Length: 251
Picture 1 (cartoon, helix red, strand yellow):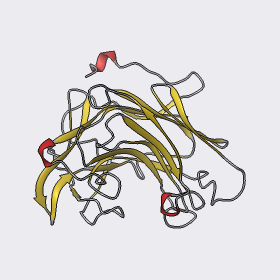
Picture 2 (cartoon, one colour):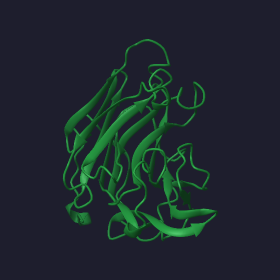
Picture 3 (tube, helix red, strand yellow):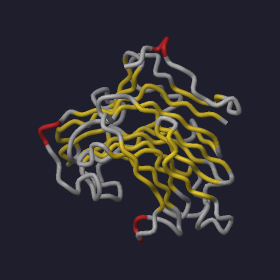
Picture 4 (cartoon, one colour):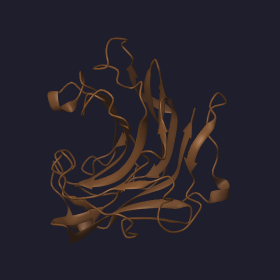
């Protein structure tokens, strides 16, 4: 765990820090920066968790780190609880560089993600207004990280989504920096400065490029679901947490 005084600025000289959370406080996530999505209705992916609000057991800050924790417990008709934080209307950006230093949970059935959705849904419902997945990880593939975009033309529901996969052997044992570079020409996704996915603006229509609008950040751990639960859920691993050292946005 990186001590607060040791945190290093990694923004490139051309970028200015415009929004951040260093988690240098104790308690619930900063309410001026984060809100909660709540409920247990499957979230479009047949997920098994109930997302709670302002519950320290699922989302809390201590020792310079945000911890989002998935717990095996019965709430709201679900068998698991977790948290899904979002910066909507508190941190919304069109273009920039986003950096999140995080450590993954461990265990089959877990599905942590760091991602972005449109704030204004200018072009219509998902997936037409777009989605940017800066980092997705599924517990049954413990060495794999995925970066993906979804649009009207390219999305997983029709098997055309655009993305890539890269590998690290220590995702749940060490922190890594997950990075999005996004401008009018395209999207680039990195881990630890290693570029592994590029999505170019084809300069066609909003169905290929809805990414000329404001987007906000989300961070969560899902349990089960169409992808995360593909190989079942190992109930012996709970509780499990995603730890986040910082979130920084540059423009």
